[in-house]
Image (cartoon, rainbow, N blue to C red; front, side):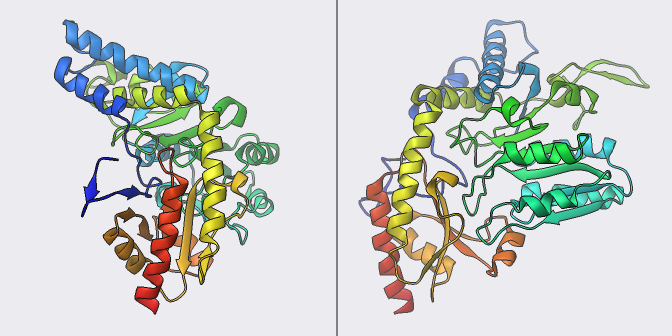
Length: 398
């Protein structure tokens, strides 16, 4: 992407909360699959099928180590965070939620961690409870814990906000949830956290953890659901069909072992193998260094952007408590107009509600601009963003 130019100028990609660019090693890995051993997995006993199966299995080990899962069978490959959460909602949710029970989430959620629970509650005639956040968009822990009762079956919260960038203390929150009701299951939306932070699902002590590969240098259409083995074993399959069975007759089917019970049909083999290459790339850098670099960049960006007249940046001000995602508005400038002018100057940001309409309503706004950075972005790009925002403000608002 660094080679991409428009009107002779390089592109500045600041929409990383939506998706990330891919390192050459990831592109080469996917290319090698299609050129050298393109085949289905778990089906053939010929050489390239065995190689594809081996590489696919290696990625499961890479992912398990990356998030410190107890074993590889706790890793389910999905198309992304959205599918991972829906898998839990339909498989675990349909089986465990009863009329009168409740599910709790927060007003700050991405729609992917909001709508599935809302719709599950409707299907099961259960309550869908939404906890507020603070003025800075942090989870209001006191309000959240007050909502938990004997009827609570699941709490779903984000590790980091896709709008505000706030990092939530999920380990502490989970401890408080379990102290109030040890039977409550907790799902963490890790889509924005996994690219930025060292993840340890056992230390966090969550029951489910969902994240997307494409936001952390991996190919599009890749994602992961982690869940405790005993929970996965108790859950029925989400999608039925090929490969997820052991035996089928005219009246019944016997389902496969973990993790294959949840991976029906032909998987995104190239994408998953590419995801393994992406995680290897991040491991070579180390997530500690990734976090340090982005924390420094976040601090610099906050300092620079806050000097722009008429700007409002939402979220926690402390760069140590947020990922490098900034939602903001400029007085007198609509976010879409700003994004258009910046786009004309080769700066890619996002504008709109960022799949978080309830949060925007809570903040008293209908939309916002969002700039989100990753490991290939620089302070020089922050400077260029600032210059172009100021120019856009003069052009649009006068």
